[in-house]
Length: 413
Image 1 (tube, rainbow, N blue to C red):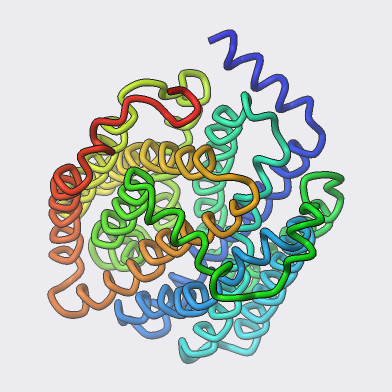
Image 2: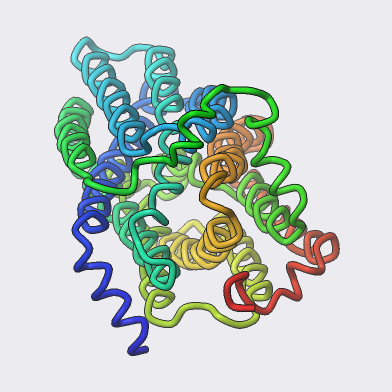
């Protein structure tokens, strides 16, 4: 306990880390607000669940096409400058959405175009951001930094959707305008980082984008079965179990709670995740790592089932809180495995591979949810997804027994 407290104090005394956290917090808060506004506005205009899935697909396609080159650049270029450029592109996306709302949105296609730009920005931001964090903190403080960083991010998933839902009552333009201001501040804050972005001279000189370097991250993950199992488990669990894309439909047609209720539904998983992250920052997982990860996925699947079957707002909220808690455990363990197992020279590319799986599970999962919901209905789609998540967890226990039996993280053995 005292060690964890000392680590947290050391992190808070680190000016670059605190500036990085502040920038990420503000940017993530803005993105969460934007997500609520986009989902509600698109469904309000078209009333088609499939279009909610297409919002996810429009982000996923550029993301999956660019994430591997983005990982290469994160290992060869100043990671701070990459992040500044990414947030600048996100600012352009918010301004486009603001312009569309001012003119009056009658079709979802302009939104799909803006979210495609957002997908490009996310593709380059994810590996750069994940690879930058270990450069800002001492290795012995990294586990605490991951838990604290994830907790801070999860706070944005609580406050952002709630704030976005409330502001949406004044109109989508108010949300997008607020988002644009917040991201502009994020750009300025990220630009003031003083360390952690420079790469080695050898890496900078070897900057050519060749196929061997491009796929180095894939080879690295493929050669380490526990790492492969952890990343692919998250992919398929969230791919089938992701219900968040359908929350606007549940808010409007199942629970009848409007945009403010949608904001609370979007925030609920973040509540569970943030509380769990704070617990993990004080009491990090050091034993039975594999069991904890599979346990988190199983809790995620069970909570998804409860949410899909619920017709009561408060039951749905509690189910989503528990869902977020289970997801946080698996995210925490996977992130530590990826960063502690990976040399800094290829950390960007391995983070990019991790990003491919995360992007597939999130954005492609949203598309999958929209397609299935259009086919069999929103409630059956969520219930089937929850059951599929549980099946994935059981299957991965058999496919990756070394992950199930893992006792400690790599630097603890």
